[in-house]
Length: 241
Image: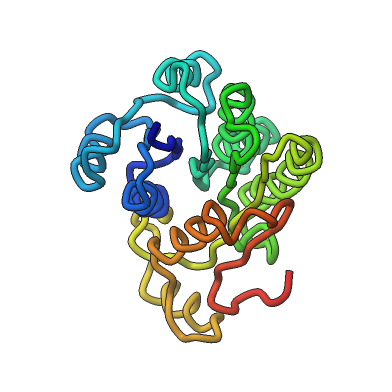
């Protein structure tokens, strides 16, 4: 039977590029996101091996829709890519609490709920769990977003430790500044773009496909002995960790 991958946040940017790469490698791919029209466009771009589930991965009830779509198949690859920086008003403690909870829900709870829900279906041995973090987790500057992404690192190490004996690996990919995504939601200025490029050693931004290539390695034959790791793909903006 054809191998199966599930990619959250699969409608745009890194998630879309990753889903397209996996389909090209022969996987059936279920992409998950909150906007049906965006998912429909992504399915057309990815091709006939892709199907979409409209669901908010931070909502336990909606995550069950993905479980239903998987049905009785084994999941070979789970890419927890859903997440965003949630801006907020910091004028009151209540507002600060709301912003931090929103960032945690978007970036951490999505991964925890999807992984927990699909854990019984992950292939044993051979299942791969990949979590998308951010350079912000390692150099700061993102407040609650940085903290939330950093939490994924500990979660991946916990998964790797608990699931290794079953032949399941868990790793984090930590991208640097990547263009052609909706992450900045129109907030990026020419000055901000130039400043982020200036922090790299290669003098350019990354592209979604370059992050997808890291996933290709992890889910392929060369990645089977890699688990509990933070894989940096940032053009040298952060070195060595």
